[in-house]
Image (cartoon, rainbow, N blue to C red; front, side, top):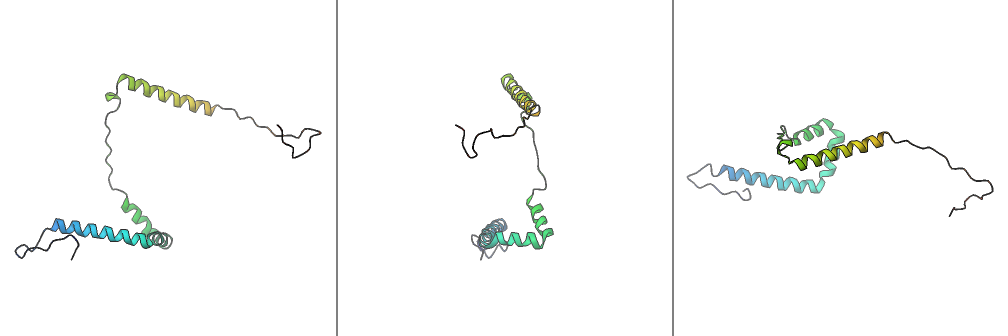
Length: 123
């Protein structure tokens, strides 16, 4: 018998299908988790190497089919102070980018001074 599922009364052959399905799902997930702990990493590596198409299909199945993106707030819901702070932050990021793009690199090399022995450290 499925753990957590109830036996249907004699007059109700269907029982509580939703509760039974929930119990079955919970048991399946619990057992899959236990199996993964025993050898999941090795199994994943084996499938990845020997059956890459199956591996990729499993990855695709883990990604949601639809993602609903909703914009909320935005500039219309910002106060004047928040808008000014956002503008200042953007200006600071642009200024930092400009500085890094226009930075000059100085190249040089180290030369030994005449009369100094090798291996001496400068103070």
